[in-house]
Length: 252
Image (tube, rainbow, N blue to C red):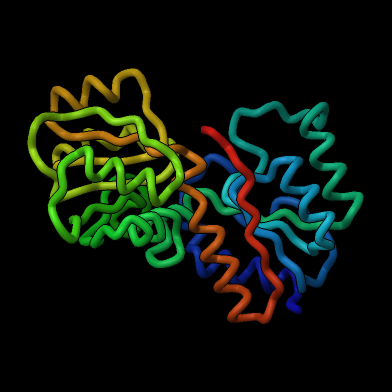
């Protein structure tokens, strides 16, 4: 068991939350009971995940996608009311880290995604502190685009959307989870053979073809499952918390 204030202070420091200019507040978003022994982790603070936390008697919920996003309506109505009521009525805290959980060098979504896919990380790029949150590196063995797509599908359980940038094989690769398709031009400038992220936008295919870089859209949720899992395991080891990662299916 750990005090909620001590847990959030530890996480803020571990994830360097104050170093990020983010789209939502990082850290404690909804305050529940003052002590935490049981922690549920997941990708998004949806009502379904909150209901799982209630069912399991959790003291706190730790997610990547929390609430109170920049530009959203400030009123507590409809879906927001139902989610907030479910938390408050059961005295469950909501803790969320967005970009800090993408960027952490060992526990972050991108570090863990690269490990899952067997990539050898060699550096960072894009926005964010410490060189950026996107990763670049190499494959252990060069592969063609179809081979890489098959490997990703087998590992993530989702068939990626693939755009070919030409006939070349893949040795040097870049990756960034979630909605980071906009970093493809930076990946091309680094001379990478391929770049993967979670989503694809209309311009992405044209950029890939014209810049000669393969692109793979592997799913926003599918690429962002591993940071919260790793962070929960870390907290269990460090503080003896009972932690459970719940992966709710999401086709996005």
